[in-house]
Length: 44
Image (cartoon, rainbow, N blue to C red):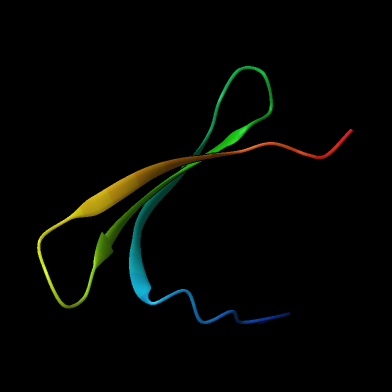
């Protein structure tokens, strides 16, 4: 069941949880060939 959808302007290629609980997100842009590797951590 889909809970929410957010327009990010990029396609998410992979999501992995690291040993510290952080989420690593690999995305690629739709309009050019650049991409990003994002580390998402909870706010403290």
